[in-house]
Length: 368
Ligand code: NAP
Ligand code: ZN
Image 1 (cartoon, rainbow, N blue to C red):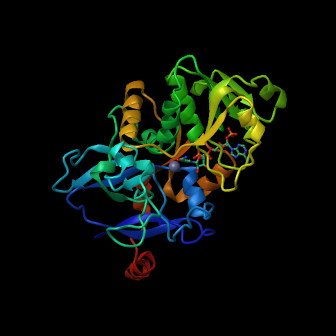
Image 2 (cartoon, rainbow, N blue to C red):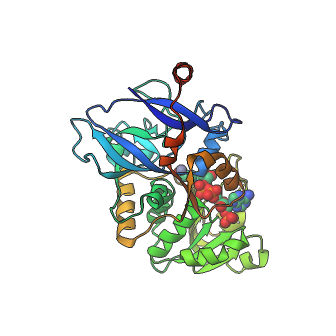
Image 3 (cartoon, protein in one colour):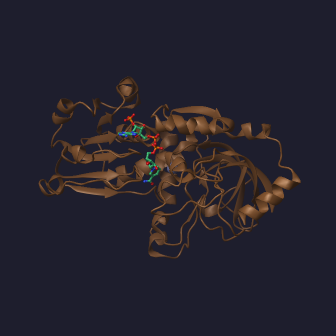
C-alpha cells in the first residue's frame, strides 16, 4: 500500500478538502496511473451531498471523480494492454465479475457485481473505492481505456462519463443521418450529446432553460435551439422527434418533451434528478411513445466512442480548474454556470502539504 493525496468530503454538508488516502500496490492485472485530469460530473455532486440516498447511501469520506485521464506509471506482471508512459482513461467502473451474461455481452454497466470507481465496497483494501480527485489510481487493466494520442488530455477526461453516457443511448436508439434528435439541458452531458448527434449526422435541436447558451449550442453542432420556457416555441415541434435525450439534473416537466415525440418515438433519461418525475400516461399511450433510461456504457463501447473521438477530433469544451476550486465549481454547477465541463488539473494537488502522521492515523481509522 502507498499513500496518495486526494480531495474528499466527510459529510453531505462539508466542503471537499485535502486528505491522504491509501492505494494498493499494483497486483498482477493492475495498472497504476498518475491522474493528470479529472472531469467534474454532476453525479459527483449528487453523491457528495447524498442526494441519491434512496438508491444508495453515500459512504464517507468520499473521494469522487470518474472522468480520469492519466499516465501509466507501473503495471502488474500480467498486464499486456498497457505499459508505463501510456495515456489512459478510467470511467465510472473499475471491476465486474466478467462471467455474467451482461459482462459476456460487453455490457459491464449492467453486471450485478460491478464495482463503481468511487463509493463502492473495495475488495482489495476494505472500506470503499476512491475516485479520481486524487494523484494516483490503481485499476484492473480490463477497465482501463486507451486515449487517442491526438486528443487534449484535459478535454478527453469528460469523455469517460459525459461522453459514453450520451454516446451509448444515441447508438442504441439508432441515431443517424435523417433523424430528428432533441437534447434537453446543455451542461456536461448535454453538450457531448449535441456533438455526437451532430457527428452522427442527425438534425439536432437543443432545449435549454438558459437563453445565453443559444450561440454556443449552434457552435457545438445544434441545428436549432429552443428555449424551453417558451411554450409557443415548444408547441411548434409537437410530434416531430425520433429521439430525445434528457440530461437534466434537477426536477422538471418531462411530459412537455414526451409530447414532442412522433409515433413510436423514444425519450431516454440519462439525467438523474433525486426526486421521482411525474409522467402523464396519455403522453405515452397516444403515439405509442416510450420512455427509457440508460446508464453510462460498456467498456468495449467506451473504447469505440474514444476512437470515434480520436477520428473526429472530438473532446469536451472545458474550463480547467485547480482542485482547490472544487467547492466553488459545485456551486456553479447548481447554477448551470459551466461551459461545459470543469476539468481538474490534478497537478494542483502537489501544492497541498502531505498529511501528518496524526492525519494519517485519523484517516486510517475513518477509511477502514
Ligand atoms: P450539468 O453539467 O450540471 O448539466 C445539467 C443541465 O441541466 C444544466 O446545464 C441545465 O441546462 C439543465 N438544468 C439544470 N437545472 C435545471 C432545471 N431546474 N430545469 C431544467 N433544466 C435544468 O450536469 P451533468 O454532469 O451534465 O449531469 C446531468 C445529469 O446526468 C445529472 O443528474 C447526473 O447525475 C446525470 N448523469 C447520469 C449518468 C448516467 O449514467 N445515466 C451519467 C452521468 C451523469 P440548461 O442551462 O441548458 O437548461
Ligand atoms: Zn459522471
